[in-house]
Structure formats: structure tokens, C-alpha cells
Length: 187
Image (cartoon, rainbow, N blue to C red; front, side):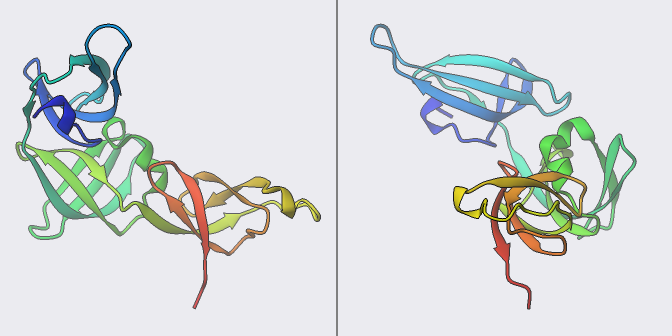
């Protein structure tokens, strides 16, 4: 895989270890040659390292497998899943789940990413809907400014939402940025 082919979430082999590309930036300075600055997350340890690759440098890509699984529960340290095809149960540490832990609802279907048969991370859909369980009242007259307030969703995560969002509403959240997208009309 060339540095120009890097994508967020791609898997590469670097120094004998498998990493997921969590972030990358192409830099073309005025003097000198271009390079790509990356943040690589070790799939076994969860540790993130920063690596700079020269433009055009080649890196071995790792083979990823994707499994549809049912998220069952967590014990504070590990998150437990069941493979929807084989019904095998397994766990993934909180370090490997990362920021997604706040947005996981028990008994929901989640895509588990595996390398060489062992689970290394998860993928959530780009947007998910959550019920608001706690929302402070919005101040009247502040609605024209685009002001936001912190609301708590059913998973316990706090999301900044517009003042008109109230307890019991269902809101759509961007799973990458943890930001409010829109209020969902209930049927």
C-alpha cells in the first residue's frame, strides 16, 4: 500500500506489528520532499504511535476480516460479544474499543474487526439514534444563537445538543465525532 492510498481505519504492518491508521495528514513543505504524518494504533495493545512516511513509500497492508456480532454487556474492563453466525462468545478490552464505548447499546448489532482471526476493534455505523434520558431545560430566548446544552443519552454519554432537545426525544449522533446531527421524528 502506497502512502497516497492511506485511509482512516486501514490496517498496515509496521515493524512486524499490525496497526490501524487512526489519523493521517499529507504534508507538502515549500522546501524538501512531501511526506505523510500518521497516527497508528497497535491492534493488540491499543497503544498509539506517530510515524512519518516519505511520499511514495510502500507499507505492507494487513488482512482484515469483518464479523457481524451482537454486543451483549461489559464488566467495566472488557466488552462481551456473540458472533451472529457461530454463536461463539468473546471479549474485547476497553482500550481496543476506544471512544466507541460511550455509544454502544446492549443487544445491538456491531461489526467487529479481526486480524488473523483475533478481534482487534469495532466499527459502528456512521450515525446512530439514541433516546435522551436527561436534559436540562433550555433558556427561553436563546434559540436564535445556535446555543447548545449537554444532554445525557441512554448509554450514559453526554452529547451537546440544541436547546430545543428535551428528555424523551430521540436524537441522531455522529459516531466518529460524538456530535448531535438531528432530532429524529418519532412514529
